[in-house]
Amino acid sequence: MFRTYHLSTYTYLPTVPTLSRYLTSLGNFVFTCACARYRCHDHQPRRCLPPRTSFSPPSSSASSVTRRWNRARFLPPANMAFTMHSHSGQFCPGHAKDQLEDIIRHAISVGYKTMGLTEHMPRLQVSDLYPEELTGDPDEAVAVLTPRHEAYLIEARRLQAKYASQIHVLIGFEGEWYRSAYGPYIATLAAHPAVDYFIGSIHHVNAIPIDYDAATYAQARESSGGTEERMYERYYDQQHEMLTALRPRVVGHFDLIRLLSEDPGRDVSTWAGVWQRIVRNLELVRSFDGLLECNSAALRKGLAEPYPNRLISEKWLSMGGRFTFSDDSHGIDQVATNYLRNIDYLESLGVSTVYTLERLTPAASSTAGTKATVAEKPVSLSTFRETLALG
Image 1 (cartoon, rainbow, N blue to C red):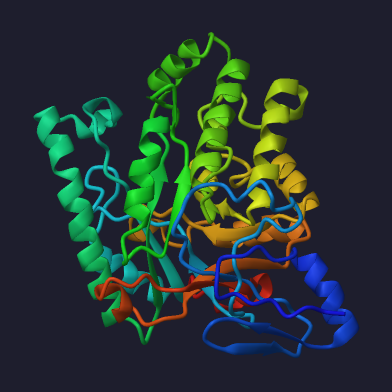
Image 2: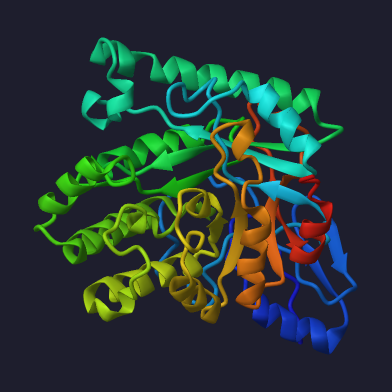
Protein backbone atom coordinates (compact mmCIF):
# COMPACT_ATOMS: atom_id res chain seq x y z
CA MET A 1 0.00 0.00 0.00
CA PHE A 2 1.54 3.28 -1.07
CA ARG A 3 1.60 6.00 1.54
CA THR A 4 0.63 9.63 1.20
CA TYR A 5 3.38 11.75 2.74
CA HIS A 6 2.34 14.90 4.57
CA LEU A 7 4.96 17.61 4.23
CA SER A 8 3.63 20.38 6.43
CA THR A 9 6.70 19.85 8.62
CA TYR A 10 10.26 18.87 7.84
CA THR A 11 10.36 15.12 7.18
CA TYR A 12 12.54 12.65 5.38
CA LEU A 13 11.15 10.71 2.44
CA PRO A 14 12.22 7.47 0.78
CA THR A 15 14.91 7.57 -1.85
CA VAL A 16 13.92 8.15 -5.46
CA PRO A 17 14.56 4.49 -6.46
CA THR A 18 12.06 3.49 -3.77
CA LEU A 19 9.54 5.97 -5.13
CA SER A 20 10.16 4.73 -8.65
CA ARG A 21 9.20 1.20 -7.68
CA TYR A 22 5.90 2.51 -6.35
CA LEU A 23 5.38 4.61 -9.47
CA THR A 24 5.90 1.60 -11.69
CA SER A 25 3.40 -0.49 -9.77
CA LEU A 26 0.74 2.16 -9.21
CA GLY A 27 0.91 4.38 -12.27
CA ASN A 28 0.49 7.60 -10.31
CA PHE A 29 0.93 8.94 -6.84
CA VAL A 30 -0.08 11.83 -4.65
CA PHE A 31 2.04 14.01 -2.42
CA THR A 32 0.26 16.17 0.09
CA CYS A 33 1.76 19.27 1.62
CA ALA A 34 0.43 22.15 3.68
CA CYS A 35 -0.72 24.12 0.67
CA ALA A 36 -1.53 21.86 -2.26
CA ARG A 37 -1.74 18.37 -3.74
CA TYR A 38 0.46 17.27 -6.64
CA ARG A 39 -0.03 14.27 -8.88
CA CYS A 40 2.48 12.65 -11.21
CA HIS A 41 1.26 10.64 -14.20
CA ASP A 42 4.45 9.98 -16.15
CA HIS A 43 6.32 7.68 -13.76
CA GLN A 44 9.03 10.34 -13.29
CA PRO A 45 9.69 11.28 -9.67
CA ARG A 46 10.35 14.97 -9.17
CA ARG A 47 12.40 16.45 -6.38
CA CYS A 48 11.90 19.61 -4.42
CA LEU A 49 14.28 21.21 -1.97
CA PRO A 50 12.49 23.87 0.12
CA PRO A 51 14.43 26.55 1.99
CA ARG A 52 16.64 25.02 4.60
CA THR A 53 16.48 26.67 7.98
CA SER A 54 19.23 24.68 9.65
CA PHE A 55 22.62 23.30 8.72
CA SER A 56 22.67 20.63 11.43
CA PRO A 57 22.68 16.98 10.35
CA PRO A 58 19.38 15.12 10.46
CA SER A 59 18.31 13.32 13.60
CA SER A 60 20.13 10.08 14.23
CA SER A 61 16.72 8.44 14.47
CA ALA A 62 16.23 8.84 10.72
CA SER A 63 17.54 5.83 8.81
CA SER A 64 20.20 6.22 6.13
CA VAL A 65 17.58 5.28 3.55
CA THR A 66 15.23 8.10 4.52
CA ARG A 67 17.65 10.92 5.25
CA ARG A 68 16.60 13.20 2.46
CA TRP A 69 15.65 16.82 2.05
CA ASN A 70 11.97 17.58 1.96
CA ARG A 71 10.18 17.32 -1.36
CA ALA A 72 6.89 19.18 -1.68
CA ARG A 73 6.61 19.79 -5.41
CA PHE A 74 7.96 18.31 -8.59
CA LEU A 75 9.03 19.93 -11.84
CA PRO A 76 8.87 18.40 -15.32
CA PRO A 77 12.05 17.92 -17.36
CA ALA A 78 13.31 21.04 -19.12
CA ASN A 79 14.97 21.66 -22.46
CA MET A 80 17.62 24.25 -21.80
CA ALA A 81 21.24 25.15 -21.11
CA PHE A 82 22.41 26.57 -17.80
CA THR A 83 25.25 27.13 -15.36
CA MET A 84 25.16 26.87 -11.59
CA HIS A 85 28.52 28.57 -10.97
CA SER A 86 29.62 32.01 -12.19
CA HIS A 87 31.52 35.11 -11.14
CA SER A 88 31.86 38.72 -12.33
CA GLY A 89 34.56 41.35 -12.24
CA GLN A 90 32.05 43.77 -10.78
CA PHE A 91 31.89 41.85 -7.51
CA CYS A 92 35.14 39.86 -7.69
CA PRO A 93 37.50 42.58 -8.99
CA GLY A 94 40.99 41.39 -9.86
CA HIS A 95 39.82 37.78 -9.83
CA ALA A 96 37.22 38.01 -12.60
CA LYS A 97 36.16 40.62 -15.15
CA ASP A 98 33.12 42.28 -16.76
CA GLN A 99 29.93 43.72 -15.30
CA LEU A 100 27.38 41.27 -13.97
CA GLU A 101 24.61 42.55 -16.23
CA ASP A 102 26.79 42.19 -19.32
CA ILE A 103 27.57 38.60 -18.36
CA ILE A 104 23.88 37.78 -17.94
CA ARG A 105 23.06 39.33 -21.31
CA HIS A 106 25.78 37.27 -22.94
CA ALA A 107 24.51 34.12 -21.22
CA ILE A 108 21.10 34.78 -22.75
CA SER A 109 22.71 35.15 -26.18
CA VAL A 110 24.34 31.69 -25.99
CA GLY A 111 21.11 29.97 -25.03
CA TYR A 112 21.15 29.86 -21.24
CA LYS A 113 17.70 29.71 -19.68
CA THR A 114 18.94 29.45 -16.09
CA MET A 115 22.01 31.09 -14.57
CA GLY A 116 23.25 30.67 -11.03
CA LEU A 117 25.14 33.71 -9.74
CA THR A 118 27.73 32.61 -7.19
CA GLU A 119 30.11 35.42 -6.34
CA HIS A 120 32.82 34.57 -3.84
CA MET A 121 31.78 35.07 -0.24
CA PRO A 122 33.40 37.78 1.90
CA ARG A 123 36.41 36.80 3.96
CA LEU A 124 36.90 37.92 7.54
CA GLN A 125 40.68 38.01 7.96
CA VAL A 126 43.61 39.38 6.00
CA SER A 127 45.24 35.95 6.08
CA ASP A 128 42.36 34.58 4.00
CA LEU A 129 42.92 36.94 1.08
CA TYR A 130 44.63 35.87 -2.13
CA PRO A 131 47.91 37.63 -3.01
CA GLU A 132 46.15 39.48 -5.85
CA GLU A 133 43.87 41.13 -3.27
CA LEU A 134 46.74 42.54 -1.22
CA THR A 135 47.71 45.44 -3.46
CA GLY A 136 46.91 48.16 -0.92
CA ASP A 137 45.93 48.45 2.72
CA PRO A 138 45.22 44.86 3.87
CA ASP A 139 42.65 45.91 6.46
CA GLU A 140 40.79 47.97 3.89
CA ALA A 141 40.87 45.02 1.49
CA VAL A 142 38.95 42.99 4.08
CA ALA A 143 36.65 45.84 5.10
CA VAL A 144 35.20 46.31 1.60
CA LEU A 145 34.20 42.67 1.15
CA THR A 146 31.00 42.58 3.22
CA PRO A 147 29.56 45.83 1.76
CA ARG A 148 30.43 44.52 -1.70
CA HIS A 149 28.55 41.29 -1.01
CA GLU A 150 25.52 43.27 0.13
CA ALA A 151 25.70 45.38 -3.03
CA TYR A 152 25.90 42.18 -5.06
CA LEU A 153 22.67 40.85 -3.57
CA ILE A 154 20.89 44.13 -4.36
CA GLU A 155 22.12 44.16 -7.95
CA ALA A 156 21.39 40.47 -8.43
CA ARG A 157 17.79 41.02 -7.35
CA ARG A 158 17.46 43.89 -9.79
CA LEU A 159 18.80 41.82 -12.67
CA GLN A 160 16.71 38.83 -11.63
CA ALA A 161 13.59 40.94 -12.09
CA LYS A 162 14.76 42.81 -15.19
CA TYR A 163 15.58 39.69 -17.21
CA ALA A 164 12.93 37.37 -15.77
CA SER A 165 11.23 36.95 -19.15
CA GLN A 166 14.49 35.80 -20.79
CA ILE A 167 16.44 33.87 -18.17
CA HIS A 168 15.83 32.38 -14.74
CA VAL A 169 18.41 33.96 -12.44
CA LEU A 170 19.28 32.12 -9.24
CA ILE A 171 21.09 34.08 -6.56
CA GLY A 172 23.78 32.30 -4.62
CA PHE A 173 27.39 32.53 -3.54
CA GLU A 174 30.43 30.30 -3.31
CA GLY A 175 30.84 29.27 0.31
CA GLU A 176 34.54 28.62 0.78
CA TRP A 177 35.75 26.57 3.73
CA TYR A 178 38.91 28.20 5.01
CA ARG A 179 38.56 26.64 8.45
CA SER A 180 35.79 25.34 10.68
CA ALA A 181 35.24 28.78 12.22
CA TYR A 182 33.71 29.86 8.90
CA GLY A 183 30.84 27.39 9.21
CA PRO A 184 28.42 29.61 11.17
CA TYR A 185 29.30 32.58 8.97
CA ILE A 186 28.49 30.69 5.77
CA ALA A 187 25.21 29.56 7.33
CA THR A 188 24.36 33.18 8.13
CA LEU A 189 25.07 34.27 4.56
CA ALA A 190 22.94 31.41 3.22
CA ALA A 191 19.99 32.43 5.40
CA HIS A 192 19.56 35.76 3.58
CA PRO A 193 16.10 35.87 1.94
CA ALA A 194 17.57 36.61 -1.49
CA VAL A 195 19.88 33.59 -1.50
CA ASP A 196 18.52 30.52 -3.29
CA TYR A 197 21.51 28.23 -2.72
CA PHE A 198 25.25 28.24 -2.24
CA ILE A 199 28.13 26.15 -3.52
CA GLY A 200 30.22 24.38 -0.92
CA SER A 201 33.86 24.38 -1.99
CA ILE A 202 37.47 24.09 -0.86
CA HIS A 203 40.27 26.27 -2.24
CA HIS A 204 42.73 25.98 0.64
CA VAL A 205 44.65 23.37 2.58
CA ASN A 206 45.70 24.50 6.04
CA ALA A 207 44.51 28.01 5.06
CA ILE A 208 46.95 28.10 2.10
CA PRO A 209 45.58 28.41 -1.47
CA ILE A 210 45.97 25.27 -3.58
CA ASP A 211 44.72 26.70 -6.90
CA TYR A 212 46.55 30.04 -7.12
CA ASP A 213 50.11 29.31 -8.23
CA ALA A 214 52.92 26.78 -7.87
CA ALA A 215 54.51 28.62 -4.95
CA THR A 216 51.43 28.59 -2.72
CA TYR A 217 50.66 25.02 -3.78
CA ALA A 218 54.15 24.03 -2.60
CA GLN A 219 53.56 25.81 0.71
CA ALA A 220 50.33 23.87 1.21
CA ARG A 221 52.15 20.64 0.42
CA GLU A 222 54.89 21.38 2.94
CA SER A 223 52.32 22.28 5.59
CA SER A 224 50.74 18.85 5.09
CA GLY A 225 53.89 16.81 5.64
CA GLY A 226 55.81 17.42 2.43
CA THR A 227 54.08 15.04 -0.01
CA GLU A 228 51.15 15.36 -2.37
CA GLU A 229 49.61 12.23 -0.93
CA ARG A 230 49.45 13.76 2.54
CA MET A 231 48.16 17.05 1.08
CA TYR A 232 45.39 15.25 -0.81
CA GLU A 233 44.40 13.51 2.42
CA ARG A 234 44.26 16.85 4.22
CA TYR A 235 42.22 18.40 1.39
CA TYR A 236 39.58 15.69 1.54
CA ASP A 237 39.51 15.81 5.35
CA GLN A 238 38.78 19.53 5.22
CA GLN A 239 36.20 18.91 2.52
CA HIS A 240 34.55 16.38 4.82
CA GLU A 241 34.41 18.99 7.58
CA MET A 242 32.67 21.37 5.17
CA LEU A 243 30.20 18.76 3.91
CA THR A 244 29.32 17.65 7.43
CA ALA A 245 28.76 21.18 8.72
CA LEU A 246 26.99 22.73 5.72
CA ARG A 247 25.42 19.95 3.63
CA PRO A 248 25.42 22.14 0.50
CA ARG A 249 23.00 21.46 -2.34
CA VAL A 250 25.85 21.92 -4.81
CA VAL A 251 29.40 20.71 -4.18
CA GLY A 252 31.92 22.70 -6.20
CA HIS A 253 34.88 21.32 -8.18
CA PHE A 254 35.12 18.21 -6.00
CA ASP A 255 38.75 17.39 -6.89
CA LEU A 256 40.18 20.89 -7.37
CA ILE A 257 43.26 19.67 -5.51
CA ARG A 258 44.60 18.10 -8.72
CA LEU A 259 44.75 21.39 -10.67
CA LEU A 260 48.40 22.19 -9.84
CA SER A 261 49.46 18.65 -9.04
CA GLU A 262 52.70 17.18 -10.36
CA ASP A 263 50.52 14.50 -11.96
CA PRO A 264 46.89 15.72 -12.23
CA GLY A 265 45.86 12.58 -14.12
CA ARG A 266 47.17 10.10 -11.55
CA ASP A 267 45.04 7.20 -10.39
CA VAL A 268 44.31 8.36 -6.85
CA SER A 269 42.81 4.98 -5.95
CA THR A 270 46.42 3.77 -5.59
CA TRP A 271 46.71 6.08 -2.58
CA ALA A 272 44.64 4.07 -0.12
CA GLY A 273 44.19 6.88 2.38
CA VAL A 274 43.18 9.38 -0.28
CA TRP A 275 40.73 7.04 -1.98
CA GLN A 276 39.10 6.07 1.31
CA ARG A 277 38.51 9.75 2.02
CA ILE A 278 37.11 10.39 -1.46
CA VAL A 279 34.64 7.53 -1.14
CA ARG A 280 33.69 8.66 2.37
CA ASN A 281 32.98 12.19 1.12
CA LEU A 282 30.96 10.97 -1.86
CA GLU A 283 28.88 8.77 0.42
CA LEU A 284 28.20 11.76 2.64
CA VAL A 285 27.05 13.92 -0.27
CA ARG A 286 24.86 11.07 -1.47
CA SER A 287 23.33 10.71 2.00
CA PHE A 288 21.87 14.22 1.79
CA ASP A 289 21.12 14.14 -1.95
CA GLY A 290 23.65 16.81 -2.85
CA LEU A 291 24.63 17.51 -6.45
CA LEU A 292 28.22 17.39 -7.71
CA GLU A 293 28.90 19.94 -10.37
CA CYS A 294 30.50 18.79 -13.60
CA ASN A 295 32.73 21.84 -13.88
CA SER A 296 34.24 22.69 -17.25
CA ALA A 297 36.79 25.14 -15.78
CA ALA A 298 39.22 22.24 -15.42
CA LEU A 299 39.30 21.94 -19.22
CA ARG A 300 39.86 25.67 -19.63
CA LYS A 301 42.81 25.42 -17.26
CA GLY A 302 44.47 22.64 -19.22
CA LEU A 303 43.33 19.48 -17.48
CA ALA A 304 42.23 16.51 -19.57
CA GLU A 305 38.94 15.99 -17.73
CA PRO A 306 36.43 18.24 -15.97
CA TYR A 307 35.98 18.26 -12.21
CA PRO A 308 35.50 15.59 -10.97
CA ASN A 309 37.70 13.23 -12.97
CA ARG A 310 36.48 9.97 -14.49
CA LEU A 311 37.50 7.72 -11.61
CA ILE A 312 35.64 9.82 -9.07
CA SER A 313 32.67 10.37 -11.39
CA GLU A 314 32.28 6.63 -11.97
CA LYS A 315 32.31 6.01 -8.24
CA TRP A 316 29.76 8.78 -7.72
CA LEU A 317 27.44 7.37 -10.38
CA SER A 318 27.73 3.87 -8.90
CA MET A 319 26.20 5.33 -5.73
CA GLY A 320 23.28 6.80 -7.65
CA GLY A 321 24.80 10.27 -7.46
CA ARG A 322 23.66 13.10 -9.71
CA PHE A 323 25.38 16.00 -11.45
CA THR A 324 24.64 19.62 -12.08
CA PHE A 325 26.50 21.57 -14.78
CA SER A 326 28.82 24.58 -14.47
CA ASP A 327 31.18 26.71 -16.50
CA ASP A 328 32.61 28.45 -13.39
CA SER A 329 32.97 31.49 -15.63
CA HIS A 330 34.90 34.55 -14.49
CA GLY A 331 33.81 36.84 -17.31
CA ILE A 332 32.00 36.96 -20.64
CA ASP A 333 34.68 35.08 -22.56
CA GLN A 334 34.38 32.06 -20.25
CA VAL A 335 30.59 31.63 -20.39
CA ALA A 336 29.84 28.13 -21.75
CA THR A 337 33.54 27.53 -22.45
CA ASN A 338 34.16 23.83 -23.22
CA TYR A 339 30.50 23.01 -22.67
CA LEU A 340 30.32 20.62 -25.60
CA ARG A 341 33.34 18.74 -24.23
CA ASN A 342 31.65 18.69 -20.83
CA ILE A 343 28.53 17.15 -22.37
CA ASP A 344 30.61 14.59 -24.27
CA TYR A 345 32.37 13.66 -21.05
CA LEU A 346 29.17 13.05 -19.11
CA GLU A 347 27.60 11.13 -21.98
CA SER A 348 30.69 8.90 -22.11
CA LEU A 349 29.95 8.06 -18.48
CA GLY A 350 26.39 7.08 -19.36
CA VAL A 351 24.82 10.25 -17.95
CA SER A 352 21.75 11.48 -19.82
CA THR A 353 20.31 13.96 -17.31
CA VAL A 354 21.72 16.78 -15.21
CA TYR A 355 19.91 18.92 -12.66
CA THR A 356 19.43 22.59 -12.03
CA LEU A 357 17.21 24.54 -9.62
CA GLU A 358 14.16 26.72 -10.09
CA ARG A 359 12.43 29.17 -7.80
CA LEU A 360 8.79 28.22 -7.28
CA THR A 361 7.81 31.49 -5.63
CA PRO A 362 8.17 34.97 -7.15
CA ALA A 363 11.47 36.77 -6.79
CA ALA A 364 9.57 39.56 -5.06
CA SER A 365 8.98 37.31 -2.07
CA SER A 366 12.61 37.63 -1.01
CA THR A 367 12.30 41.41 -0.79
CA ALA A 368 9.61 40.88 1.84
CA GLY A 369 11.94 38.70 3.88
CA THR A 370 10.48 35.37 2.80
CA LYS A 371 12.89 32.83 1.37
CA ALA A 372 11.77 31.32 -1.93
CA THR A 373 11.01 27.64 -2.37
CA VAL A 374 13.54 26.14 -4.76
CA ALA A 375 12.94 22.88 -6.64
CA GLU A 376 15.24 20.64 -8.63
CA LYS A 377 14.64 20.44 -12.36
CA PRO A 378 16.02 17.63 -14.56
CA VAL A 379 17.54 18.63 -17.90
CA SER A 380 18.29 16.22 -20.73
CA LEU A 381 21.87 16.46 -21.98
CA SER A 382 20.71 15.97 -25.56
CA THR A 383 18.43 19.00 -25.40
CA PHE A 384 21.06 20.90 -23.39
CA ARG A 385 23.37 20.49 -26.37
CA GLU A 386 20.68 21.49 -28.86
CA THR A 387 19.79 24.71 -27.06
CA LEU A 388 23.36 26.03 -26.89
CA ALA A 389 23.99 28.78 -29.43
CA LEU A 390 27.77 28.85 -29.48
CA GLY A 391 28.23 29.91 -33.10
